[in-house]
Image (cartoon, rainbow, N blue to C red; front, side, top):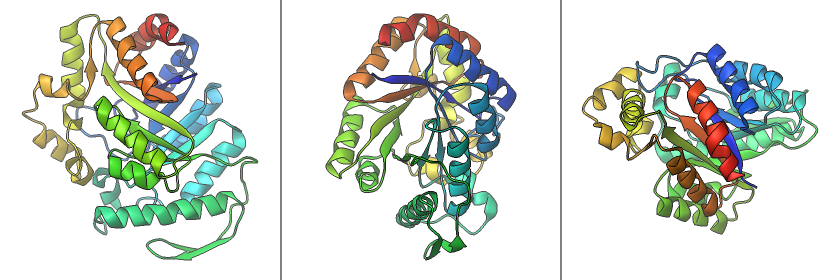
Length: 318
């Protein structure tokens, strides 16, 4: 049965309000949750970007939900530190935590200086990080010299069971590459045929585990309000790679998105006041084969969305 969870957007919502939202979501019938680990929002209008790892400890304690995080080890974070963070949460909350690993975005990684590597180098670096993290979580002492360096690292607090390391991908090519090493695949909503090609590429490369999807949506009592919310909050998020990978600050995103129209945003975000329409869209994604679907209402007010979807949408999908 497909799991329907809540995506928690640290870039848009204060962490205290986000904790209240995920508790509300659990009560409303959502059965999982996830978030991304970013240092910067994509727009000054979004206005937040709390430290996801601190928040996850509180959220895991405050609910019974399983949680995942999308993280980019290798530049802002050393992989041994990420292995320690994963190991601690998974040891404290057995069976409730997973991590998706990706190559990152300049808006988060540039802060430490040192330049932004080419995509092929980021891929190679991520693969090294995955191997380091896996070995540490398995209890090995790790030394490694490559695009990342590790000297005699060992995790002393580890979970009893392996933690799923999921591959984060946007393109068909990256999905196929992730199939070589990942315990599952996560992506965001895109045209159905593109998602089908991603799934096929992942499985053809030997990709195992569950398929996860983050769905950007905007719901409000009226179509005009739903579209206005999406345009106000998400117009800086409509750009495909490499633009979204390579811009460095929220100001940059705001400049390049200044003339983005509401109709352009609606090509990226599922905008509708009709809960039945949202149900149909989510059902289509489920039929594609996604095992976990995380709903991200792109507005900053979450309460009405959570209540409405909990009462009218999720019951139609279970």
